[in-house]
Image (cartoon, rainbow, N blue to C red; front, top):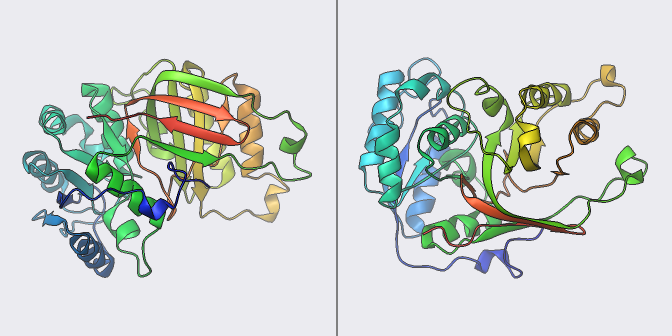
Length: 329
């Protein structure tokens, strides 16, 4: 996997002084308090000013506080004036808040310079925000799972985060996986080189995105680049979710579909050879849109940051793929 810079990924950040980071919990309750504290300590050790929302550790059933509590936390994040509003974790809880989110306040805070960063359940917030206001947010790490790990966080993820903090991130590159020998994919011709320009980048967690189909909260970019990832979903469930997007006409409206990492599932003897590669081949047979794989994004340590709603150039040459958005500010 190559970083977006063709040198040591750990040196890709440019330090421009501390950033004001606001940590809030819009979804599930934080259960791993040690990871939460480690994440805060790491950000502070990097020289940043960290402000923790007053309800960041609230708990109500499986949520980080009841709906009103979490809505108030989002409103405080929008009013914080922070450079970055970072979620503590994903989980579940944002789809039930979508009709009541303070979209205008969030969009205004983004205009003033606040970057919203998160993934997983945060996909609902990001895509609803895009659908309602056109504002750009960032698919990227969560505080606990990514910055609060017991071992050192991934270098590439940290370098990409630093690029966001300093306004230097311009794109993300990766190597498309080689088809495994003997697989159905190995017999197929490779993806022809291509370049797409001015395509809106959007997407995130597949299950969350599919849950927005038929609602006012699913963006409808024509000619977009749709990126997808998921965790704890068996390949047949991944296929069923993709079928939802396919039958709703979402996939055929894109210029490209980019699959990130689909992790933490277990195949069973009943599958008899049905696996994730099967799903990719099926998807390619169902749509004329190019389907790329291997994007370093998802519930994995090595993840790039992706601007949801930004206009991007996607180029593929042999096994090298590059998403380029340039400076967004």
